[in-house]
Image 1: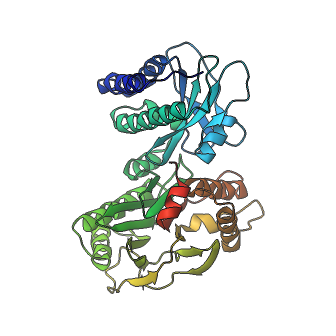
Image 2: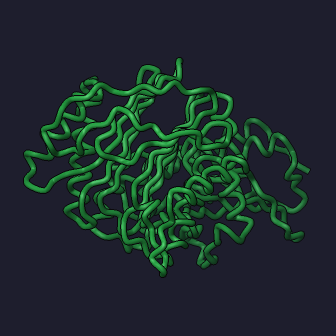
Image 3: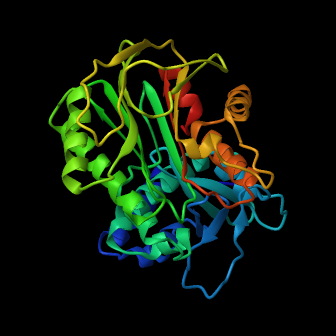
Length: 403
């Protein structure tokens, strides 16, 4: 039976905040454990690896060496995939696997074990667990820039220099507000070169962009990074889409010869659903409506970035509530299997539509897409494969993310 007072709950959260104030990133698991112990809980933090296949336990100063948890085959993985707490089937102690989030971005899970006799269905206990987990997620995100422990756990220290450059520039992989959900993913996570994406929310407008730089090496990552920096610079100057594209052109031209990228840049008015976009030699975004890909957005086209080309007026698409925009790079559809068969556009559309039919959350949809592409190519992509989805609709935004 639970006997959790508001005073005890507040004391736990206060202890967590105070303990984290001067803690380096590698000490956060110990701070979390100490705060959990105030209510008799025992906890272990698990972070998702950047390939989103394995949940990696963080050291806890208790001498234990717990095993990693497979995302597809464990209760921990189910909690991560569903973004909902999952009860352990063990009968010896009450135990929950709880999603670990920064806002709505999935960071991993928390293994929480409770004193014997704890009623896991108690609403007050569930509220306290939710507050505790959300605060831990925010602390991990806030402390990450100050050390390498979280990054090393998630990457295994195997990133290439090109991948380090790209990942250091990316925004969080998922965000949501009342009107929109945006989620992106890159593969191969440890060797990414020229694919980058970005988004921002400002004054009722969702700004999104995806770039694919020429080449598949460090030079490609530099080009993609320059395109991303020039895009952000133009966006933060409140420039229009055509002017931003011209700014990227000038930046890449100044960098040197053979410095090109394709890209799509768009602005979604969250009040009206009007999506304005410019496409610089990139694959056309797809429009997913009522679970079906109804068309590609083929207008607003200009020459690839890096040439002083003709300025084009942005095209417009009027979205309906629940519509999903899908931006992607050629590494998705051009992935080849051992017989040199492409993954292909039709297979990509099929995965999108099946994910929509299953009402998968946006991050889980992307995780499954890129893993299908990787599996098609035997786990070794020959080109970057990236996807960015944007869903416009307030009610659906709450369904696709955790409460």
